[in-house]
Amino acid sequence: MLEVNKWSFCQPDNQFSLQKWQKTVDLMTELFSAPAGFIVHKTDEAYRIIVSSEQRENPYHAGIELAIDDNIFCKKVLKDMAPLYIPQVSLDNQWDDCPLTVDGVESYLGVPITWPSGEPFGTFCVMDFKKTDYQHSLLELIEQLRDMVEDDLALLDNFTQMREIAMLDPLTNIYNRRALNLLCQHKLNLAARLGFNICCLFIDIDNFKPLNDKHGHEVGDKALICLADTLKQYLREADIIGRLGGDEFIAVLQVKSNDCIEAISYKLNEAFKENLKHMAIPELNLSIGSGIVAQPKETFAELLKRADEDMYEKKQASKLAR
Image 1: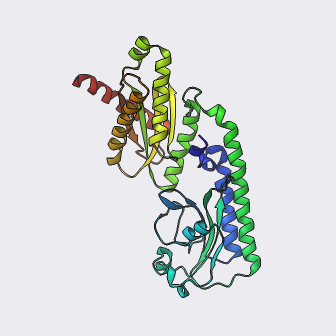
Image 2: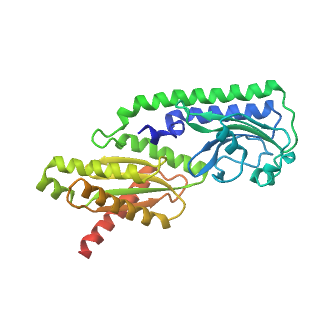
Image 3: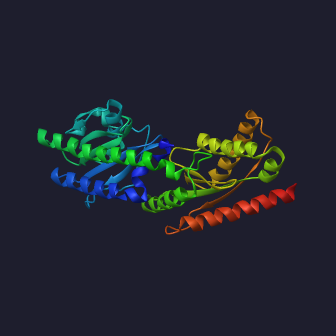
């Protein structure tokens, strides 16, 4: 479950980290007399700016993403896991196709940020639109500031592990109702800030009570564990999954459009049935309702209610179709 918490520094009780990092990035750019500084987080899909300095001349705001295959400075930093300083980008033709070079970036200094495990988290970097000549003391400074960010990650990583027990459903080892309310509301807040779409899936197992009545609670528990494992297997690290209680499960996902939700639901249902077959459990179907955030200030409770209502409508339609 620790893998799911790679965004633990953005959770409500750890919001101080982003605020602290914002001050750190702003201070760095002031000391470097630079127009732009960033903390960039690497995911499987992209390089995302999660903190951006607040000068007027900085054209790149928090939430901007660069494709994972783009030829960018941060990519080289993490590939080499070493600092990278380019005083005059235009003299090095390997950066001619870099999107930032096209935008006029002429100088880059960046250092890698790692999780306590040593796994790459992203980069701490400063950029300028003119040639620079940073002295050695400034190169040391950016590494010292980076170390402060890594200290925060270490503290939060430890904190995450300590509170896992209180936030997990003991049967399925995924988030419980309390954790869902906490984490999902914050994900909605973060989505409003960074401008991405959030979808809530409300998942219910059809005919779960008859399964329990006929085969016993032990088989029913195995079916619940199977569904939890299916969700962990087929959804992404950044997605939030949990059990509300009984046979009701929740998944909160970042999506690009409505079009992919039906495909995700179909894939989850088919994968669940296939996993049940491997466990020699009678076939079950899922009723999956969905709701996409309709407005920036919508609460998780409101989103969950719409997803629940959609699930109920689909379950009733399925019964009528039989």
